[in-house]
Amino acid sequence: MAVQPPNPASPVPLVRAANLGGWLVTEGWILPSLFDGIPNNDLQDDTQLQFRSVTQNAFIAVENGGGAALVANRASASGWESFKLGRIDTNTFNFKVFNDQFVTIAGVNAVATTAMAGKTETFQLVRNDVDKNRMRIRAPNGSFLQANKDGSVTANFGESTTWGDDDPSVFVVTIVNWVPSIFDGIPNKDLLDGTQLQFKSVTQNAFVAAENGGGAALVANRPSASGWESFKLWRIDQNTFNFKVSNNQFVTVSSVNVVATASAPGQTETFQLVRSYADKNRMRIRAPNGSFLQANKDGSVTANFGESTTWGDNDPSVFAVNIVNGPHGEYQICNGYGKDMATRVMNNHWSTYIVEADFAFMAANGLNAVRIPVGWWIASDPNPPAPFVGGSLQALDSAFTWAERHNIHVIIDLHAAPGSQNPNEHSGGRDGSQTWGDSQIAQTVQVIDFLAARYAKRSSLLAVELMNEPVAPGVSLDNLKSYYQQGYNAVRRHSLTAYVIMSNRLSASSLELIDFASQFDRVVLDMHYYALFDSKFDSFTVQDNIDYISNFIASEINAINRPDGPLTFVGEWVAEWQVKDATKEDFQRFANAQMAVYRKATFGWAYWTYKNVNSHWSMQWMMDPYISLGNA
Image 1 (tube, one colour):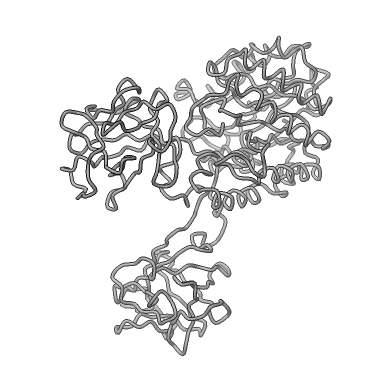
Image 2 (cartoon, one colour; image 1 turned 180 degrees about the vertical axis):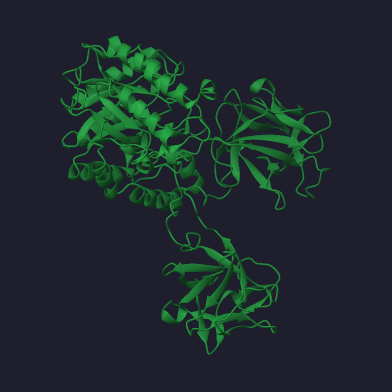
């Protein structure tokens, strides 16, 4: 039986929503591979293959990069030995060579001589069931390619094979430049903005540190690494970086001395990381003066080592590097790819990750709303500030259209505010710094004004959330109230009916905004509840988790609900926990317990999130039999 809303301002029916997390604001942990459902998903357009004959133990190459025959006589593979795929279907491809010609068959000889790809340039890749990197290549004439003892490659081998090392039609294939996930195509993808590096000198067996966390020289004398020994990256390109230290200063070079004294990065704070081919975690650091950093016996770090190196343990310019993962958000993916490639990757993601069929699915399964996280840069679309790229606004426009077709309400959620209101990747920051404050209020209000003006007339607009998860004490209560007042006014300039949602601060009292919010009309307080992110949950049993929701969380919601107060909204929750080896029935009990309690929220609830590679975080995956909204 449905519960009647206790507040006459409540929406009827109450909101039962899914968050469209990971769509218009990137969160690396959410994003599944964009290619997971594609057969042979590692063989995409522009993927490069290198074919090594198992009988000749040699790679296939196209002589002169094209315009000649294929040969199987190369000891190693690089440009001429790489064949770029043009995908026709799951198993059928064209092979493009170095000089942009295509492989074809002349008689029985394999050659790369055609300027355009057609039927006679179309080959089939047949993969071994046991080892997917063993392949045979069926030519347009129906025969298989083989590598001959004289080094030639011909299309005259029959159908039969044992897949053994004595079969000249079998090739071991190296797959190059496959982009299996939204981040994986980024060069040096482990060195993104906000990633922290710890440099251990191989000669001194000591970590480099910024004395006092900054404002002084770098030294190489620490036996272990923590805060002062960690250097946060600001990425310029795939090899070039600024290094930010604990107190937010940047590393620079003074004469030959390496110091952390610059308040802002420029050319003299820009360093190049050079990686060892044999061990990617061995690096050298080229300073702005052209020399390499070295760790000296007296513990100093100077920029006066030459170009030559053996990468050995006797080289003071070599460092063994610990890579401490940083954020994987919108800033990192856009800056990592660069504008041109990021525009392609992100627009493909926005147009495929959430589509109209998802809205149809949600409506058919009892959901009546979506909460859509957006970033502040959407207000500058199609030309947002670097490194962000345009296109997300068009996707949001589409969401409103789909919502109206399927009777779904839309909550626009400003998930990432200028300067970042929390240190998490979903706030769109560069390096995990939280700097939103008084100086960002005006810009943030402009974003809200833009969104309210654009969508106020859309029938599917239900609410505008002014900010997601501001974190105390970094966001002060006074600044937040000032912003919420101005943000509320911005929405009301364009709509008298849209609800305005104000998120509670994390790490602060859930009651601190009640009196403030009560002065406004059609205002909602947003609360997020997870049985995660705190060590107290590590030992909880199934029943402990259910009791926690049914008792503690229920009491908190009851305390916030007031007849003359703001509406209440559980804007994020999930049926995930720390319980090991939980059964399907356990998850069902946990989800049902939460929905029973969150029905007390006078605005409704929203599951985090609709899609997620982690199954229990994905409402799409959890829908029947794990979650049923029949009694929600």
